Length: 361
Image 1 (cartoon, rainbow, N blue to C red):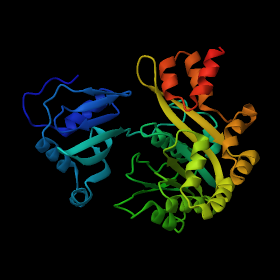
Image 2 (cartoon, rainbow, N blue to C red; image 1 turned 120 degrees about the horizontal axis):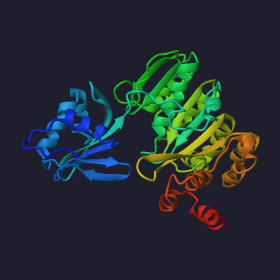
Image 3 (tube, helix red, strand yellow; image 1 turned 135 degrees about the horizontal axis):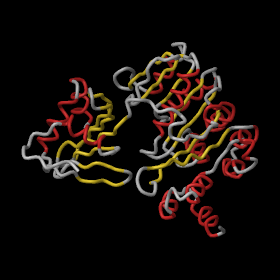
Image 4 (spheres, rainbow, N blue to C red; image 1 turned 90 degrees about the horizontal axis):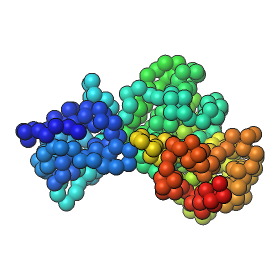
């Protein structure tokens, strides 16, 4: 823990550096509390002074540019990313509470991890070799979606010669041009919306487009069009399983457009990777990755609006298809004593199935 300070001055650079040193993923600054950090899934207060509204305003203003200050004043919400020399890179979210400004900072590794570094499924290296189509990485906030996508792009950067456009809010991982050429764009400062950026990206000679979040019908429609017209498209959604991802995409659209979207999705989808992070025994977290890979059967079920049958299809011939369910991933972690039964149950997206498998061991 950090030693107690005697002065009221708060050095945000030192505080963020301590956040990284202590192995924390997030730092929270809220009026009326000392700074708190998240380690694994638990918040832990630091032994520092209680923060006042003035303290947090001073910290917040020290990191914002003039344009960002105006945006925050207007909307009372602000997302942005920044780097501090000799400290690291961070994603910041400012928001207003009844007591004043609050800040949440997420740590972002400076060095982009490789696919092998976190034990990602080897099939990911095959999926990213596709010339066109849609690859979705889904999961709740804080499940490592951005890290997995960054690792995929990094693998492409090491092995291919492509033009990669990323559209994010905000840009998180910063990629260096190794073999690929990166054009990284912030929604808000570099482009007005995700949908607009995708539309104009098609005229910017991209091979690959990363969409930070597919949050509305216009963005999803533009992403599907890009995937259909010869581009490899990566995107994210906040869904907890592969089949629910398909439902979420289709349900965004009005009833008269859903048949068309099912047809587009059935022809362009490459894979859905639904990811969650579960606390390890001891410390740290481990990822479970449910994988649905499109084939003739999966494509046909999507087109015919039989999404409820996708899960059963995922369980067939897995040695040949490369598909995985979250239950399988969790059971392997349990059997290898990497996670506890309590955390397995808490994080399962098919609890009845998991309990049945556990009972039959």
